Amino acid sequence: MNGMTTVEERVTITLNGQTYPDLEVNFAPYAEREGGVAIQLWDTVGEEGWGPEPIATATVNLQAYNESPADGCVFIKDYSENSGMLASLIATGKVRETGRFVQASWSMVPEVELLDDWLEAAQIAESSRDGFIA
Image 1 (cartoon, rainbow, N blue to C red):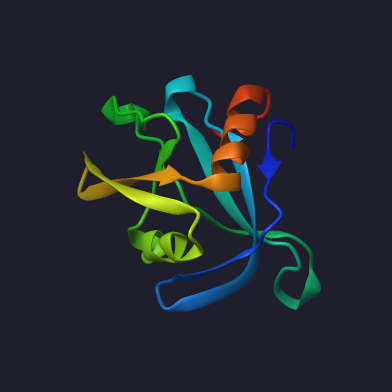
Image 2 (cartoon, rainbow, N blue to C red):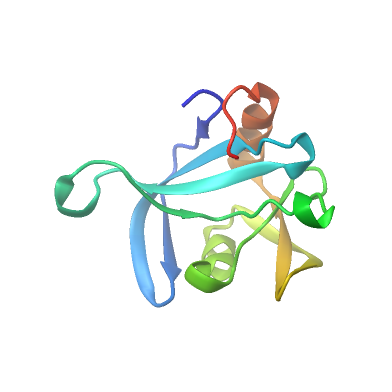
């Protein structure tokens, strides 16, 4: 997909007690410029070898609440089917908590700062804006 940037290093995450190893990490801009960048996690082999399958979108766009992440940051969806996402991403060493939380309906959504190659991938994806996540 145009506008998507993939980092080389794979990650393992645990959501709702289920562990997903060796996931590809992709970055793509949200449709609204102020929405920031989406982080998508993919199993490139897929269950039973059927091919790539999306596991989760780690981020959430809070433009509906008139909230934008700070530069170099994203909002993490750490509730519902993504419960455990924040801890899993922090464990990768690729994000750091900023201490900022935004109330979005019934959830408090944490903001994290992207580090190292994740920050670079997000910047590349955001600058491409030709393939975006709605």
